[in-house]
Length: 411
Image 1: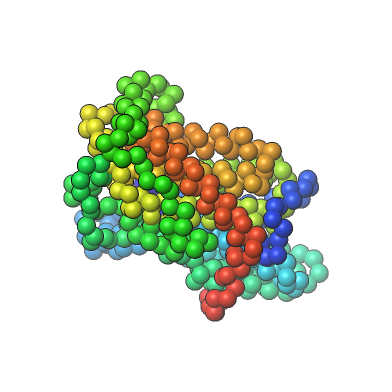
Image 2: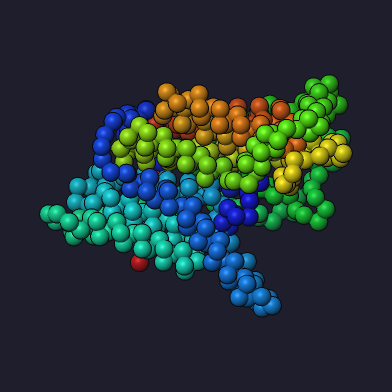
């Protein structure tokens, strides 16, 4: 899965029923959704600020190094941490009548995002958004007291969630040995493999990254593999403008941004409550994050060669880059399968549309010339089984684990 420069910012309900009840209502937009929708704006502000800082530091190697040493998080990390903190704040506020739920959610959201975005410009923007929620909450009986309690509660939840969260690093250095032989993937000249440690990370809810490891891909010298490679060749020869458009769409945009937009649209369409929104977004983002951990574990277990490595004459779609990690299974397909399964679980009436989007996301990699069909099929299946497992684990209360982390509230 390629993580575009524009979005390269550096790879949870207590006692709730198994399925959210999506009842009609006329209440304002959930605070959870409001802060989820703010993420793309903070991303753009962060990108612009870093670009300006690099321009100002031109020729100053020390200043440029300092900027590089403050990597910003991937979107999957942003959405996952944000959603888990919101989930915890919603349920904690429900159990604490003296605290304002809206302030607890907003404060947890702001605390997590401020921890992830270290740029002062972005932090100031986050602060202004929090101030809006605080001002709105300071009306009515005991409003000031409840707002203060809500802020304290939200910040405490955020601290504990940050301490409990898995540590992801897609670009961590790796000094291992890349296996060689027919059908084995090889790294680009002078570039270390990306995401090796991702598959060794602790997941949010999986017991291990290899828990649902997919079956092996077809053997390199088998007719099945050769047929799959020939399909990629044929698609490359006959690639239509529409195929190119789809390949470029999913190559340039981060799937987490697009799927969170899709989830928010569904939450609005079904008039979901605050609790429902927090639950859906938490399970959605955790399920897809766990699917990516399982995906990279499988990638570096099988080390499958890319189509354009198996046939160096194969032309990729215009403006589609070749990711520097093994082929099987497809990262885009893994996340797509997870997103599809979670949203289909909570909104079964819309499942057909979610599946259509997921299949387009997966097929975009075949259209681009960088994956075989078996990469896509294996990835979709892996993402769906991981997501179903995470849905069940949330139902059993495993997203309460952050509560046991002994972390004091940050000043």
